[in-house]
Length: 574
Ligand code: ARG
Figure 1 (cartoon, rainbow, N blue to C red):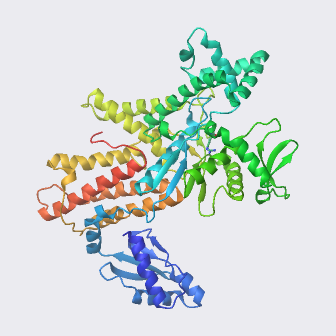
Figure 2 (tube, rainbow, N blue to C red):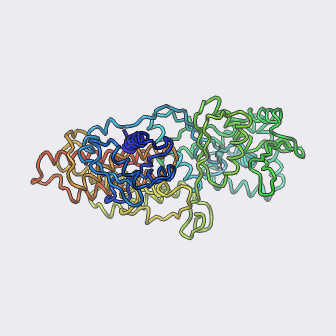
Figure 3 (cartoon, protein in one colour):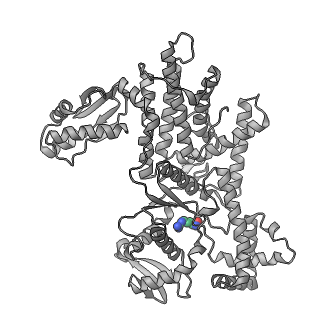
């Protein structure tokens, strides 16, 4: 049972018994400072206002009535009517003894579709793809951890007009059979074909022809396209592996997969009179998203020339996810710049009854990653930064740091640690800020061993493991009663008990920084505990030592589990 839930239940019961309207929430929250207790119930003020009574009196009555026998030591009124709750040490000890069995599996298992990463395959993955990939993957892990059926959908862009240009370019290499070589660097290949397209009208005409042929199923163009796509997908899969992100070939459901649905969707929307003809194009006009002059927001689903658009494909994908995949929730992790597009798709999808009311459609957007100059992250020469280069640099930088700290590790160990630290640092720097904000990419800050960083948390983990190594004990085999007496033990215990609460929160609002802040606080609580409460020293009584070792082992497990939900690995030494 989560502490906050338990307290909420007990307070609600008391409030109802006092005749307080049942929709008045007891408003349980963590206390900001230990002197204000461990939790606070802040609902007395609102309840008093509703009833026209004095808030401190109401708070006093609630304190009289609430049954927290064996749970809380003291309750006190603070300020205008806050109730500070000091939990009992015994109660926390008992809860912790069963914490292993506490893992909450969601009440009801849901089918949850998560659309994330979804790069355009015309070019190589670049820094612009990192946020969707990392944040989406964290949510996939968290929802899976809760027992949901997570369906990852990598909506890769493999069907746009650019592919005509790319296959016209690829054709140039076929004769000398060095297509493979040509595709070695997709970025260079793209630039070359773009140059041909811009400079050579004949090439441009052919490229345009090829898109049409490709989309109408021409075998030759399909074949060339397939060659290109195969290389590009393999490249993305490699990045996922480097990033320790759980996307694989089975999750690829690219735009082209919906090709046969597109004219069906357009016809259906026309039949339902949701779309109309407008200068030859088929358009959905949405009064729900009208501008300030009252003009409805237009979403084109078919161009006058017959071509389909990004929105058409998204409607087809939405229908597939709701009907065929049977989704209860559909989550999209896409840049904030696509907010209007997502709103249009959601509203239209509901109007057309591709999605029933019960299905939750959620666009979880995010800000931009900025360079040190405060502008979108670029290479020194102003180009886009390839993800593969960024990750390589992360590992190199981590390696230099690890070498400095540990002269006695061999190269294999160093490479192994540096990979986990470097990749972890990049991911954590992204996950630990509120996702809707922009953030500045800063190597030194993210690789620091102090502060709210991955290396700090990984280091905290290795510290704990080293306690067990020193004592020659198996960390997985520690069993004892927990006995909490010191205040540092209490703070740590409380933190440990809040893990599931935090995970549940992130599963709902999809803000992973909450989990990061929690892990940072947990690691800090552990460090303070370890400083004040000796564990292995000979003068420590055996029962105390055993109890503290359990706290250590729970701390290590919780840190490792939390980091794993963020897709970050831990190690025994660093
Ligand atoms: N390929 C798109 C882009 O790079 C992102 C796709 C996101 N998913 C979606 N269903 N629209 O901008």
